Image (cartoon, rainbow, N blue to C red):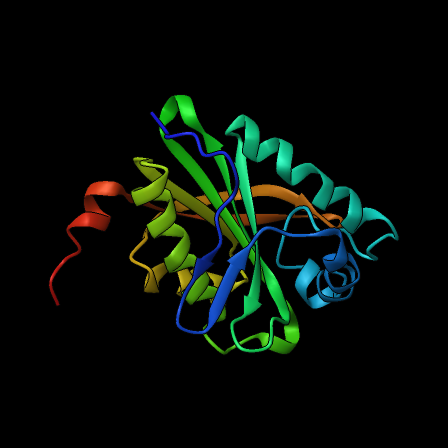
Length: 189
């Protein structure tokens, strides 16, 4: 079973700090996530992004963490502290698994930040939360997200055809997953 922690940790990587969101992040969330190009790569980010929505979203994080249902990290630059995006785990503790989700603000695309944050999240999920499986989905047209999943060792498991209804149309979702045993013993190249 997942070990309980009293407070959400902060995770450092070479270029990033993953930390809990604060209400001070709300204007930056609204600006970055409110970009139509970012919103159209996700299922739940609204566009246009309404005033107050970021504060409301941030306000849900602590309770979800305390209940062991989820964890959300702000992805920030290690040198300047700038908010770059978000990464999360939607945890199903009874099944020892979680769904990972993430977004990166458009000014920070194509710099490897999503890959670096996702790799750190896998380490956290398997080594600190002791989960057995992490899965993630991306819209079929969002090839960059699929490349992130490939790079961190997740395996493409299938396509859910016309699985989601987003902005007036059905879209395919591509499913990726990784087991703890695969994470602990990656294939040799």
